[in-house]
Image 1: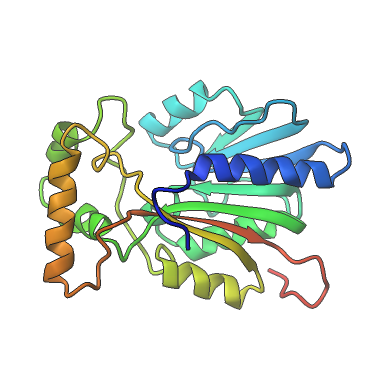
Image 2: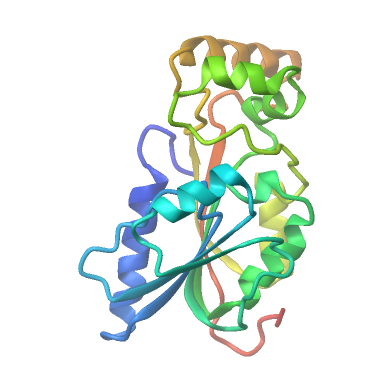
Length: 239
């Protein structure tokens, strides 16, 4: 696991996408941006790529999706049924989606099913076992606090569902059961409220919550970012 001070997920993901494209020997790569209304535009300079976005159909997410310059096409709706063809993508990038939707494992299965053998699954999500995520789930008057604590351009607040898979233990277990190989696992601080104008106050509250939990809730990160590869060989479980 990387130190939160040493990496940003955007830089790591951009490099891994470039490496994946280089392995294709000039062939265009197909990328699925799942959570495109909340994720950041991908850095694809000098890469031949086609990017398809999918997300829930919410007004704020629709506006952010329309404004993204990197998407060639997109679909918004129920993520259990939006069109996703099997084995159609070289890279699936899932950004801040799993923690805010119900049936997260079912949706993630659809994303993995859309990934070609040898493809990359890039995941960013809030860690359910962090103090920040605990506050995100439990704090009262969440909408009012968001408007006070978050930067003005932050999208949210979005639903805080946080099923089991939206945690380090949960996603590691998921990958093991599906025969997926985790190549990198980074812990980061990226929560809008944590980085907002009152970030020091929020960090102090996270430390207090961690102490009250006996250390079970991590105070030093809120995001986990993983680079996962779908195996090439035929012994991998098919989903």
